[in-house]
Length: 272
Image (cartoon, rainbow, N blue to C red; front, side):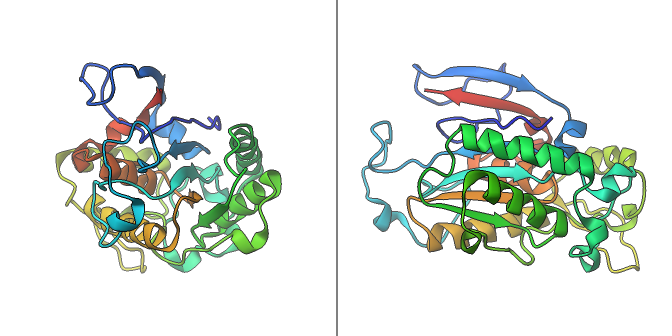
């Protein structure tokens, strides 16, 4: 699924049975998907709560709210699109590849299907006018994510100087002993995640990290801290090589229990 999803506020990952704490005039649109579908390109927009926003309950100007970044944030200074890179060459073979040693390898780039998925997502971003104003693209230096960033930039008329590679905090989640195994074994990882965000995949001796959800949470918090300090009232497109970075980031931004980040495979769109 490469369709880009959008909302006018933080994407709230509540189940349909829960009562969201948002203005009553908002309307929900639910777009179900599966964890497997997150293998392909998606983009999610998160719009900041700014003092200039008539719906913002926070009267402080943005400049007074900046400093040490915490999850969930008091407010965001920028508008964010979260984009999962399209299918990689390894994924086209049904294999897990998360070892950072190979992240810049050509073999870790987009497959032909992944390139087409990313082009569609890039045009979805264009249709949403994501880069009509000042726009920055922050991809992982991982080959497939950086390729996706270049495609997004080309379609949306973004100068290459506005592509800022991120060298470690947006790496694909290290899956330890699952490295090189079938993508079908990911269900075992996510079963452990639902029990505790601190459970790590089994270690391995090939240099692949074995990261828990909490480990990923620390990394994506670092990314947001940098972005919220470096930019103000800009648009930032974050391009991740995997889905875990994005679901954990969404969970952190919305205050969701990290054990429930898997529920974000059901994406809720909010329209005001």
